[in-house]
Length: 187
Image (tube, rainbow, N blue to C red):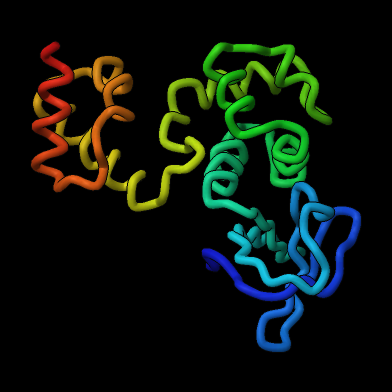
């Protein structure tokens, strides 16, 4: 399994890029290949899909984009090739907002997403996207998850915890984060 590959773009196709890393050209399917420049070096976050007759790489410019993609493909009936165009057309914040607000019309504007699949996306993902936010690193996500677990173990409900997580400084130690979170919860 790959997390990311760093290399130079040697070819841009209509739905993919070729990323050269140490003389190996990786064909990587991306949401918008024309956002990459030929000859420029990129760090591309990777998801590898292995099927019986296929081994494909899907690439993303940011880890947030990859995380949203992974959430989308966890939805019943939504595969990799359907999730990629969603990321090409919509912004991360727009997609997350549509899911949280149950905006079926917004989700139906994406290719191959009908009424039934839009409802399934909302059913499967509503309330599960709070840690994908733009600008949040993987270590911050881990820290938020740890803080959330501690607070749940202290008896707080997830709906009480969710609004205060973004207000806690993730650069602090976990102990100080818990103290800050408890202060916010008691207000």
